[in-house]
Image 1 (cartoon, one colour):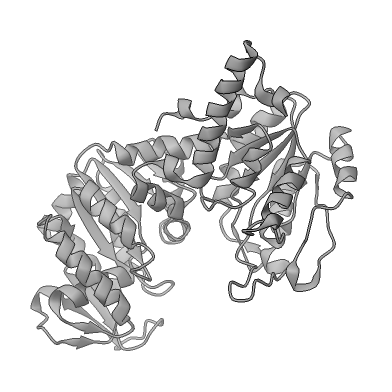
Image 2 (image 1 turned 180 degrees about the horizontal axis):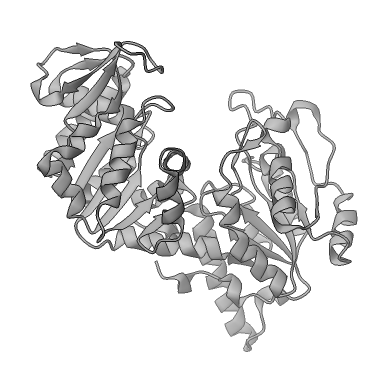
Length: 449
């Protein structure tokens, strides 16, 4: 998908405009920021807006404060944006105002109250440098499917002159990523543009393309697995996904692998028969008698090629690093021209050797573009191989996506244009072009609003 299909922030008149920016700063767990990468990745957009004379209002979601069963919303420190605000103030030496609203019990915030106008006035008068709205998921309208959604979209639009989406990782069609584009001139930020550009390195990959995917549930990544199997020259599996695959293909059982996952894996194994030798099976797995902890004498390595049908294993919690010493496995990684990784191979934090070995062998390939996607993938790379992580951030051969789920969703649909927030921006661009033609001038679409 060419970037020209999107309305880009470079095309917006930002001078003296209040700019509402949706970011994906969802990096807080239990009130603590463990990795600020996704915050830092948005600095380019924020600095650009300020340099062009714009006034910034930020918003993001944090965690999952909404109970899916009863719809109640829990507002507490564990899902507050306060740690993000503190980080930005300390990092950038700026003042950020956090407006507060009245919470209606378990319903969360029903609306954006008029008190926010005082904060916006202070923003326009240079008394504060930015405004950061509360967690968008604290508002009843954010994920609503009724009139609450449209009302919230209208309220957000009333805060600003322009909307910028720089949250590629937030791909769900919620109000703050999707609905608001109906009411404000909308543009893609620089991070959004960068993520889409790097997605093209997967869609139009230099061959051979090796994809590595792991996960704790087969069903959460099943569609992307089918897409990647067809697109990739080789597909490597890890985690429970690999366990379910082994159970289905070799007729063994592994403790903790649900029957539903095995059934899905069986369908996948049958489908994969159309693509012989595409799936690269890592031969050595680590069985543990204890789930989670790595207890000496309670774990062992098995060669899957020697397991007999009907074998019952305890928990399989990692891929053993000697898998990557096998000549045919090593050749797959060292001959690749593009490597896509959305995987933590072992159960963290105690079973790390498979992930370390994977990332190490990938780095041994000097010719491949290495594309990493997913918060867990990124955090484990930083935790286990901090030197490689730091190098990767500035290397042209590496790119670390801020949103793994969004990347997989785009791969499923074979284009980022299938993601609702991206599609909304494309539609906005088309609408802008129509209005320019009708007006018979080059005046910006802001006049429509």
